[in-house]
Length: 195
Image 1 (cartoon, rainbow, N blue to C red):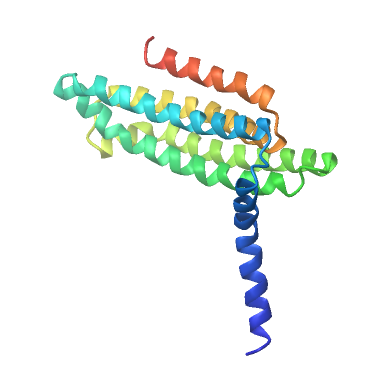
Image 2 (cartoon, one colour; image 1 turned 45 degrees about the horizontal axis):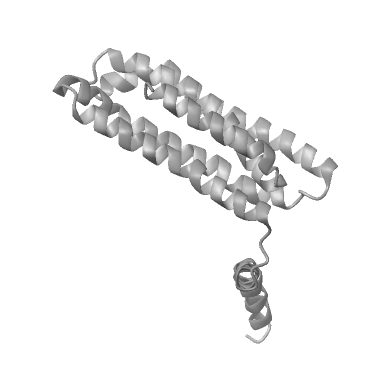
């Protein structure tokens, strides 16, 4: 019983140490200007899709019933994609932070993870692309939904690559490169919603 206590303590320390370090850093106001900028950029970077979704929902609410029906039936696909994207990208912060100081190990990890992540994401996307007509038929959706689903699938593959790059830029602290990527994402969203 006593042997398990040090192990439990070690686990608790390893789990809570990063949180305590962040808390101490906040108390001592030791964040650099670059770190504050990265935090703000990341917050805005993830805020933009929410704004885009609000605009899309507002536009959809003004459409006729049959068009709204198409969009509503395909909304499940957006949720599935966001879940898959989070599943594949969120662990990247941890995996890259482990080797960010060792350039050779970082290059190797980038190549391995990008290959595995892209292959997994592409496989799921190819399956969805090929079976889009079956999926929409199962949902009783109109034929226009197939084209939408296939276009979304292609766009989501490109989005995965950009998400991978964004994570890498954040981990490396490359805020000078992150900001142009952030504006690129903003401009793509504006094009997508017709501004």
